[in-house]
Figure 1 (spheres, helix red, strand yellow):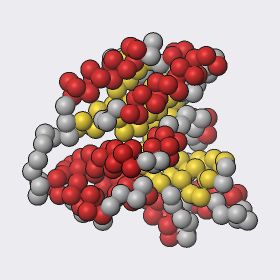
Figure 2 (figure 1 turned 90 degrees about the horizontal axis):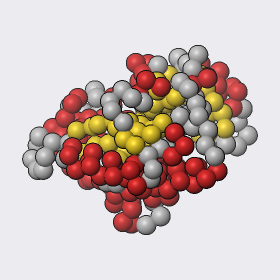
Figure 3 (figure 1 turned 180 degrees about the vertical axis):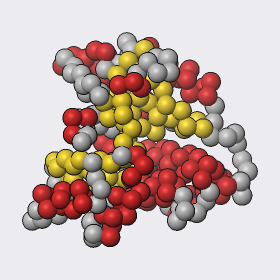
Length: 244
């Protein structure tokens, strides 16, 4: 069971909500989704019916109300039908933030040197440090993550049983949301089983959860929140995971 591992969380979900406040920030969200869609289409083909990771990213983009033409353009860029700009690659950076919090920063970039330089500068100014490959990743486990809204009046425990029957490794219910965890290789099957069972899925993705957790003092937490905001404003950053 994965229960002990699940106190870690992605800050992307909360930050993306705040970023939807104005059009300029919404455009930045669309750009971030477009990069990932391009990568998924390039690596696995442009058909979401046969490319599960592309389908996941399209669903996340649609949840953010990304226009269909933006999605189609990103797919065509990935398949080579549209040729423009440098190749976009996905890189996960590892760093130590205020108070020693361990962080994974998932990026999509067309310029590795620019991205690593900017992220390193952000960490340094925040009193943190960008680490070498493997320096932080050892403390994280990659899992499948599915979020299912629980309607008012519904029995969350009955939904949890459905999720386990569908192949979930573990579930957590909080704030009217059922979070379902799977082994990475089972995410597609579990999502399809849940959909067949009539469960409405809000989001499905791969996430990193910590094996060992940490806590921060109040002062360090304030500094950490500032670091998160600055990282999120960096155009290439896609998601941020920590061991809090």
